[in-house]
Each structure stands twice: as structure tokens, then as C-alpha cells.
Image (cartoon, rainbow, N blue to C red; front, side, top):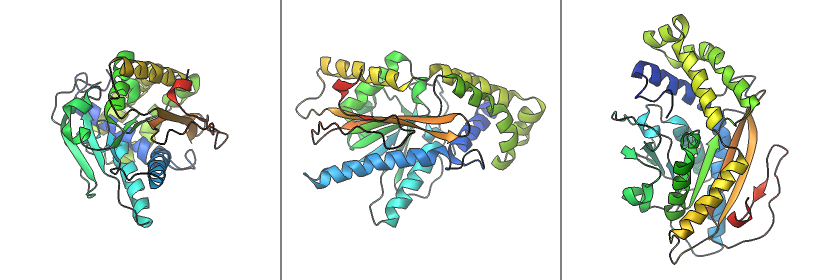
Length: 325
């Protein structure tokens, strides 16, 4: 449950808050974000995963192309959230090198929200984007959605995975093991003091950035006159920091989910180990860091120990769920 859940807040508060959060994901802020907006970093990581899968398949049997299914509630927001920005960046790059676009499916996930309002899918000109208007529970997506079940895909979570409780998060991973090619978790905060300090800046940032978002008179009133929107941004950010999991915590969840999956008889005839990569990189000066944990099926069965860090800011790479503590 989030403080900005539609069951707790009216639309004239939740909509500008979601717009602001999407703005922070997708629009670079001069000086404090010299390397671009956070979505640029997420797109780079996700594109690397997709390219790695394609390179591995060049050496073996040709498989069905891999798409992306986002579980960030993007289909219920007019902007499409960071997933739509990531899709544009990845597919524009692929078009420039004469590769086929990656198909993105945007869902309106309700496995962590209680909203019962009808989603309004964002507008997009790209033919590679598909929206699922009905609510999709990420814990049972494989069984409940034929469009997801029938496509090889990676599942993405842009600043939403921390919304799941421990049991729900484990079930989300188990369902990914059952029906997905991989899963990619991206968070803009960690459970630490530095993230709390960054969250405290959301209030002043909302005052500075709001004029660039075509605000309504109601939004202006509740930002500058009665600053409920900045207050909710900060309070909800503090709650997100509290709920965020460290990389070792996420990897322990991976092990628990893998154990659950095999105890429940998952895998069937086509069973693969999953390999996991993780890292972090500064997205906003001075303390903001993006954390990502990416897992995918290891169809080559490569157990090599090449898990070295690519830069000083990466945490490194581990291969094989069984090696993670």
C-alpha cells in the first residue's frame, strides 16, 4: 500500500504525484544529472540483457524473439511511466542498427495496489507497444494472462518491486521462473541514509520542476499554496526507502523463490538455471543511486566464473542462483 494509492488519495493529488515521479524518471535535470535521466541507465541495462540473449542464440537453435512485459502500472497512467521512455530509447537504437523492434507489453498491475478505477492507457505511436487494460496480478500473471503466457519475455519492475511484501515478492519471482525468460528489477533508492537525504529534496524539487509539467490550477494550489503534494511526495518516498531491499536481500529472496519453485514441481521438462547480474550507479548528484538486479534463464548452461565488475560503481556479477547467499 502506498500513501498515493487511489483508495487513499483523490485523483487531483495522485495524478500530479505520478506525473512528478515519471518526470523524475524520464527528464534529465541539468547539473545534478550529468549522465542523463534514470531511464537512460535502465534502458542501457535492459538493452544489454536483450542483446546478450540474442548473441547466445546465434550460437544455438533459433528461439522465438524475446519481448518485455512491464509490471509498473504504466498502462494505467497517461504518460506510460518510465517503461514507455525505455521502449522508445531501446527501439530507436535498434532501428538505427537495422534490428527488429522489441515488443513491449505494459500492464496495470494491481498486485500491490487496490485501485478499482478504470485505467486510461497512455498514447503512443509505436506499433511495438501493447497495453493490457485490465488489472494484472504479477504473482499469477503466467496463469491468468494468455498474452503474457504465449510470448517469451523479460519482466520489468521500475521502482515498483519494493511495493511487494516479502511473501508477495517471492510469489512474483516464482511466477517469473514459471513463465518468463527473465526479470529485471530497478530501484532509484536503497534503504539507507543517503536515499533519505535524496527523498528530502523531493519537496524543493517539486516546486522547481512543476512549471515544466503543464500543471492545472488545482495542482498549483496544492503545491505552492497548500503544499500537500510535496509533503506526500516526501512521506511516500520515506516509506519507499523503508521498504526498499538491499541487493543481498533481493538475492536471498531469489534463493527462497527458487526453492519454492522446485518444491512446487516447477520447471517441467525444460528446466534451466538462472544467472543473475546486479549493480548500482549514481543517477543524481550527490547521493541518488540506481540499483538493479537482473536474472534470466541460462540456456547455454555456462557456469564460467567471469563475474567481474565492469566499473568502479558496479557491484559485480554472479552466475548461478545456487551460488547466491
